Length: 398
Image 1 (cartoon, rainbow, N blue to C red):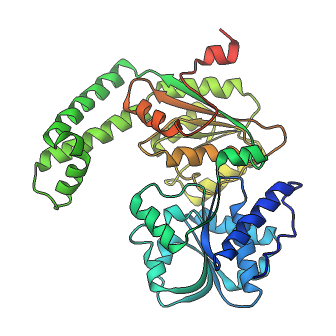
Image 2: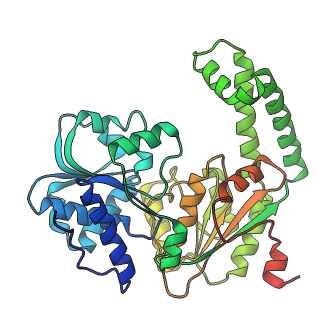
Image 3: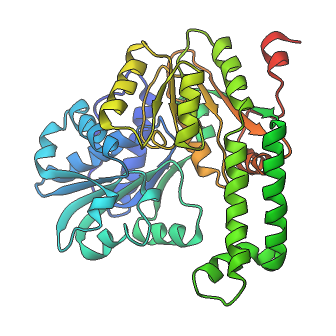
């Protein structure tokens, strides 16, 4: 087996170059079938490009699967960046939502970027309806669901894995600090939240307590006889509680404090909904970037952010995958949910390696609410977490 050539350096970081080579050779050692699990900033896109270049040196076809249209363009740029533009003549770069329609095609290599987003029952049809000789999957966050985790292990077992903390220790990504800042609901918001919470507790009791989530899903899916009205109220209460905490107006005030403190620095913010993203952009004199905007709006927002005419970029999930702005060191997360995955992705977005940069992530959460429980669950495996932070004390020592 020939080692995969990685003669180009990424800037002057020989450690990163060596780790990427190690990852690709581990994949090659598994008969060119496997998954690279590495945090944002490791250079997974380059690994994908080098894998395609290595395989297509002998001829053939390749396909790269990505989760978003933006990443289609970005991955094509990666081929040009790493002197593999000639491979584009024989490589398709396709979104998962389109690739599942492909049938009876054969590829010498399949590269799956952000593979955790390509394992749904619909998207996985690509792997059943087409053939391929080699497959490289890449992700920063392997799937949490047992079904998807098992599917990935069968499709492309882990070949190489490096944690975010290991990346920091090796100098592959910037060191970071996480500041968890509690906020309060307004009296009106607290009334709404308490009402939704009472409805949740009552519906949960009617649905069997501990098994309420499973039972509600089965009842509404027609797989279990039961109280459909209670099941509907159960999910309505969950959505309402989430909406109230994710749209807490006090988060706008606290975010403004953070932005003002870090004057002159580029800042990314992440909200729980497109509506609140728009509100944050207005409150912080920033640009919004989310799925309800046009491609022209996206391009304008990114251009303003890149050239410095706007230093605050506000998004929801649109920037979760593959966004790269090396000179960003400050992030504000103003929308949490029940899964840690989105927050970890958002955190990683800030940790691109640049000289003397220490990433600072401010997580704004509603105190004594379900959002606090989501936060505690999400950060329990992360280092450098500062809980219950008072910004006056942090910024001014008072």
